Length: 159
Image (cartoon, rainbow, N blue to C red; front, side, top):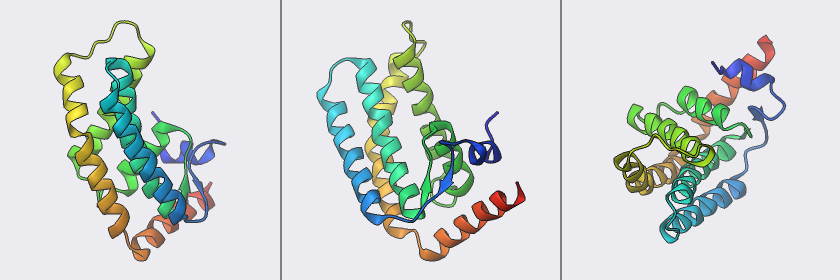
């Protein structure tokens, strides 16, 4: 089981960096581009992959705004579940995890266990998640960011 502590100890795991609003905006743009790509591709494997990245990039924009870098997707998702639960509700966080699982399933395995209904659900709900991420990006306060960064610093110090 992946933990925040483990993620902090990994070279490409969770790292504190300077907050960067320009990068946050760039990741929102990548999210929107992935959403467009999802609608333009007909192959379900690539549609699911583009859908996941549309979600992931919108989440990563928030991490950039906070000043968090994470190149391990499970760590990024765990960060959201741990530190962004005041912004994303349980349904959103479960959807994020499900989208990750569906991307893994459809991209790396030749026989997908996903039924058509699951695939259609993720594709249908992507715009909602991106809109929510954009809202969080504009609403997250300096106080929220400072509190999250303080918790991460304390975890780093305790190692």
